[in-house]
Length: 351
Image 1 (cartoon, rainbow, N blue to C red):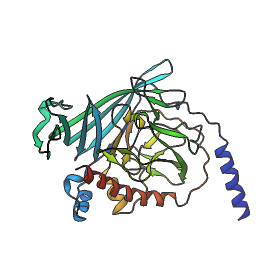
Image 2 (tube, rainbow, N blue to C red):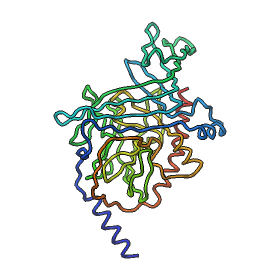
Image 3 (cartoon, rainbow, N blue to C red):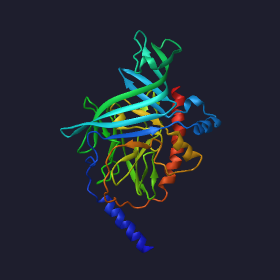
Image 4 (spheres, rainbow, N blue to C red):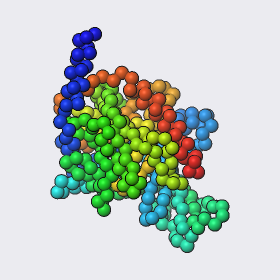
């Protein structure tokens, strides 16, 4: 027993004395893409409906999108894919393009009276448009638009030296959720997400590990696989999104390559990479993974927005030695279920 504790102590000391360097991993270069997916799965929808949840509240994606001075709530009921592609490397910065493809979509948007509706969709994708009555004289009109499909695109920049994310106008949003430098470990209380207009930050709570393989649609990773847990104060955007308690977030990554294999484990995604293109808050649920978690109790999946595809060229590298974490996966599983409930509550409130 004493020998075991001594070995654990040595591993922990090694882990936290690694050099803190946050440069981009070796595989990050122009032309590389990383794609995540949240797929529809009918057995999961049926299980949610059987618990009394309205079908329209069961989505693969629920996105808050700011565009042209308007606020759009986007709900997707079929498959959602998010593809990041590195477009250019110039003067120490990477230009990254984002494309979110969704099918069977509803969009809710409020427009000030006297102004025209500004579409974010192709007109030939529109099924119908409804005007939602608003009690009293609020000075706005609200629309609900039903679409066959919707694509949201954007471009932002990442600084290579430290992974910092910037919008094209230079606003800083925190550290990228696409990779964690495999040669360093994020430190406790390190700032990872920044919303400057709200004076709001999310910081590192801890890094924990799993000593078993972890599944994605792309393939298996690990062991080990690391989980970066983040925590922020209550996130309040009046009348839009309101968390009355601390706001949790976590992402899962492969420590040997730095690749993030699921940018969220608990469905809610508050990511600098999306905030930089006008999406400060989103919820993604791969329904097949959620079904495996809730019904089959299969906790081997990376998270609720798993890696689907990438053309990154990985090399064989020495694995970063992590100390074992025996119970963190179970805690994350229970947390995932709780956060799914929280997301549904947020959706009910905003409706």
